[in-house]
Length: 207
Image (cartoon, rainbow, N blue to C red; front, side, top):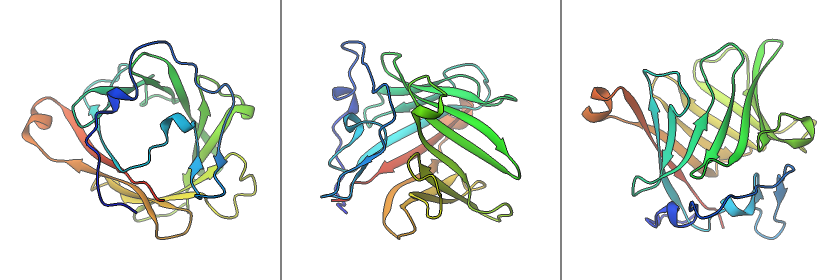
């Protein structure tokens, strides 16, 4: 795992040039040589660590309350839809407004499961991955992520361990100790005054 982070603005890669057509069907393929997993599209696969910032406008329930920026504060992704509603369904879009994935909350027995689909679809054929708590009763947040082809769900493809109170988490590859991403809350006066919560996200690249 490389420790060097690129400061190249993502806006250079995710530009507003033309309307993009993301894959019509779910990917979730794996590279046998590198061991890397292409969850959405090779377009989003980076060969180096990447720093992002997630900004949440706490006091609003309107669309666009979530924004994702690169190191130069360029908005590269945003979320359409209302997260705090009875039936949660929202769409991640790029800087040109093109849908990338749809998040849908599903209640299943004692578990609340999130399902993520390609584009604006909620069809089972376009499922990318799903996420649920590793156990019903938890003191800290532990989540298991299963890619669509992992139908038995005996072992998770990724796992998330963190603290809701501290607003931080670490993402691991499967049940290993290999860290592929992490998030932490940024504490600053500007965020408090503007009614925003800001999170730093680092995405690592494993060769």
